[in-house]
Length: 208
Image (cartoon, rainbow, N blue to C red; front, side, top):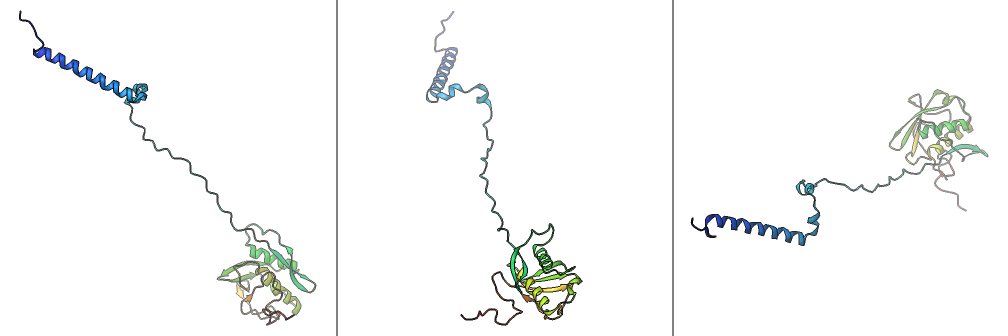
């Protein structure tokens, strides 16, 4: 039988397989040497898909700014034959506009029985205040003056209101008896001394 040498096709195949096996083992050993963590990778981790889950970091809560401070209101009252803001107003009733509520507290302070404000329509800076018919009960000159000045001072506490007009059951009126109310009336801001219906010199204080 002829002697088989390493130059035969079968011998070459075996030699090639041995070389490939040795080369693969060397590459793997080098990878583990330079990447030690690879030696601890489990079979499941090697075969699983990479984790591409997006994890968001909770955002920092942004504090909500508080609304403007509560407006401290005062009820106009008659003191020493003049109207002043010396009585703190009660909190407005639920569901009632603070302007309307303050007007009604003012009517109670002036002891005008039965009279009530039932609504307010703000157009621009002019407030149309709607009253029931009891507001037209009839007044003396001084009493009516107190009423108008008190309304001026009550509504003057609301910065968005510059003038107001009295409306009775949805209809504008010209007067309650003595004072011309056909045009909107200027409000009186807190700290002002005189009503615009008292004198034409309200913006010019007397010289010292």
